[in-house]
Length: 245
Image: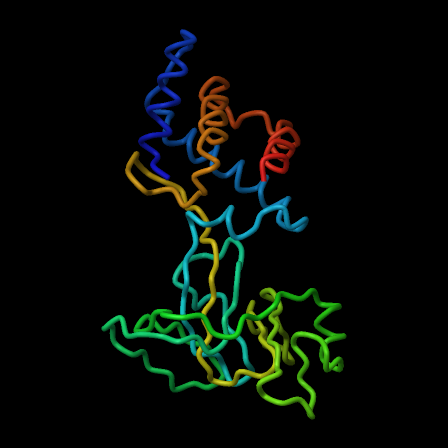
């Protein structure tokens, strides 16, 4: 999404209604509008109102080598995670031509910028903590890690990022995958978090294109008020977003 387009549209609408227009405040207004919509969407993610199609414009795929404990540390992603959309175990990959990173520590996961996905592998289903615990002993569930199941019949599962504590040491947050993928190749498809802008530009906002009009409207609201906007409108924003997805 282009912040220049948002600014241009907001300015045109403000001029059309003969409202005061403050150009120096535009960047700040856009940042506040994006942050407001970002928080509103986060409130809806728990209800699974937003899926793969919604995040298509901001989707990234990173390839990793997992740790010996079958985990991927959130800090090793190339971008900040907004929402994980899919996890693929043992995908087919090709070489980007970049240098292979040092992977000496088996307790850590590593981003593999030297690899890109050419074909999907074994899709892992996302589980809640309760489902994760039950699946450990259920041979018919995704993420079963017991014995007596043919390799070809294994179905993978993953747990959203969680911090793990061992004595006084905290690990994570990490994405956990089961059955065990120790030091294996895994691809993660995820939506990247939007970051604040410092000037108007092109393709500089990591936000789904379908939210363009919502962000323009919130930008205008902040410009009108010259303050942080009316946070009470979050409920109305959520209603519009839920009804449109």
